[in-house]
Structure formats: structure tokens, C-alpha cells
Amino acid sequence: MAWKSVRLLLASLLMGSCGMYSFRGNLPVHIESVAIATVINQTSEYLLTDMAYDLVTDLFIRENVLRVGDSESADSELQLTVTRVTDKPATYDVEEIVEEWRIDIHLQVVWYDIARNRPLFEKKFSSFTHYPPGGDIGSDGVDNDGDGEIDESDEFGDPREFALRIALDQISTDILNEVLSTW
Image (cartoon, rainbow, N blue to C red; front, side, top):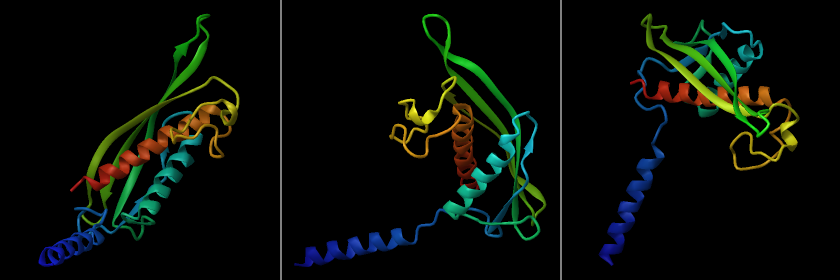
């Protein structure tokens, strides 16, 4: 009977400690909020400015690691610069016609501590993905976003634009992970 009580006590202690876990990790204590600055785009890909801003902002809001605010009231600021986008053929068929393209996106990111007037990190991020040369990805029979579902409702439109979104989504996750691992 005593062994059962000890196991119950240990289980409740373990569950109780899990309830206090925070994704905030070891972020500097004076930083409770972040502003996402307007994205600087050094490429001719005009879609990337708003797309990068929206994806990074949405991820920070969804994960609730830091409160997202404006640069006037935030403790820190993320400054993103799209530095390069490249397209190149990835695969060819037997007649040497491109079957799949590879798109690479490169960003320079600075996380700036407004309160202490210094950068917390400066880092380059990149990601790539593949896309077919044409058609609608909603009916191509491919899991374009890697979620295990083929041609579901979130896969539609221009393959290249969708590939840009997938690559930027990965970079957004990498940026969040870097913020979490900074301290």
C-alpha cells in the first residue's frame, strides 16, 4: 500500500513540474516584447516583403514567446533583410526538360535589444524548397507543404509562390528557435 502512495506522489510531482514549463526559456529578463520591423527587400521579389513580415509576426504571436508590439513600446526588435532569392533547375526528364525547380531564399536577421542599445544576435538564415514548373499545386498529386496530406485545401495557386511561402515559413521557425536559444 505504501508503494502505491509513493508512486502517486512521484507522478503528481512530475506532472506538477511539467505544468510550469515555459517556452520563454532563458531569454533576458528585461525583454518581454518584440517588434518586427518592416522587412527590407534587396531582391526583385516584391511578394517577399509582406510575406516574410506576416509569417514571422504570425509565428511569434502564435507561439507567444514574446509579446509582439510596435517599435515605440517593445523591448527588442527583429530586423529582417531579404538578401537573395535564386531559382535553378533541380531535376530534368529524359528529354532534358525541367521537371522541378529549386528556390533558395536568404535573409539577414538582427535581433536588437532596444533597452540596452545593442544587438542580441546577427545571423544569416536560408532555406530552399522545390516546385513544379507550372500548373495548380492543388491538383498535382504531390504533398507540396510536407504535412502528409496530398492536395489538401491549403495547397493551391502558383507553385513558385507557394514554394516561397514554404521556404519563408521554415526560416521563420529557424528565427524563433534562434531567439529562444540566444541566452
